[in-house]
Image 1: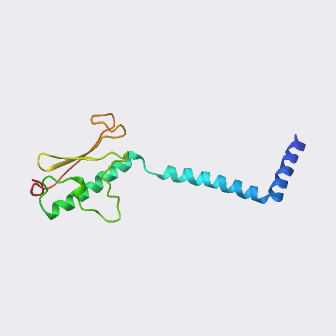
Image 2: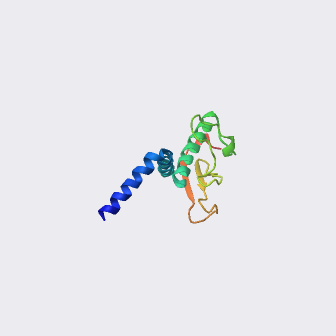
Image 3: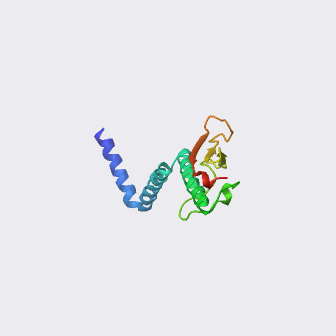
Length: 135
């Protein structure tokens, strides 16, 4: 048993010292593997990304409301905000739906992963503006 482990160590030493490029390539591959999965694990989930986009859209709607009454405005007509994602799509790439309810309440809706209205993963985000901002 000891002779076998010594033999393995000697073989590893010979490989790393006689062929250093193999060691370099191995270390680079292992590093790339760990970096890839570390970055992938830091990406927000699609649900979190959708909620973030809801808050950005709320800010954009409130900015538009400060400039004047909002009538039939679409999400594509809202002013952009610098240094943030101005996307009007949810985390799955589906368009976010905006509805004005009762004249002063907004509801942003994402149909979730399945992209079907009334599906199992719909997200709704509601907020209100002053009555003078909505018509």
